[in-house]
Length: 113
Length: 112
Image 1 (cartoon, rainbow over the protein chains, first blue to last red):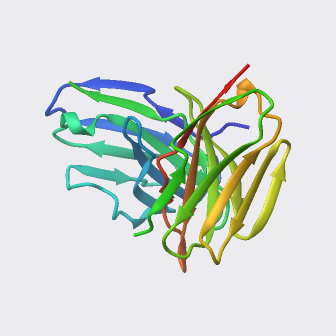
Image 2: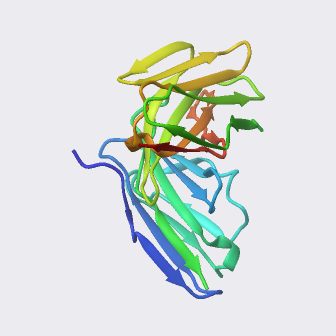
């Protein structure tokens, strides 16, 4: 069956631009997570959705970052006024239940020039 | 905030060797995950465990809740095992699983 998909796989943008990163979770998975992985580091938690609502957004680094999941399936991570320090791989994961393993997407590699 | 430490950071071994990667964390957890990440690839979940031991093929994961420590073992290692192995911990609240807290990963290279 289809796994978690993320688009685009690579995004190059200029400093100050706005970007949107998309995550399609596994069908029926209620929980969706966004993580960010900088080069040579482990991933860091950004935000977690349970259904349509953000259950925990404590990992978002600042108010330039925002994420939505309007219908409880696809999620979009939005970054305004991008900075070079935003360059990283943005990972999405979904799970079918609170206590289940997380299934990760391939990630979107964002490069801010 | 939970602190997750992995050791070693880098490990190079010969094919066939028994591999051990360690993970310790600072705050009590609900579950611990071992993940595998290949260069340029996505992350694959190997194990999720909250107590005891799990085995899948040549991989074995153990956890000691009292000592806040887990180990991942690879028996009869093979060059295709070369990857970054990441330990991550989860806390569960009434609403579900919080986001994972990750270690920095162990970069494993198995030479033929």
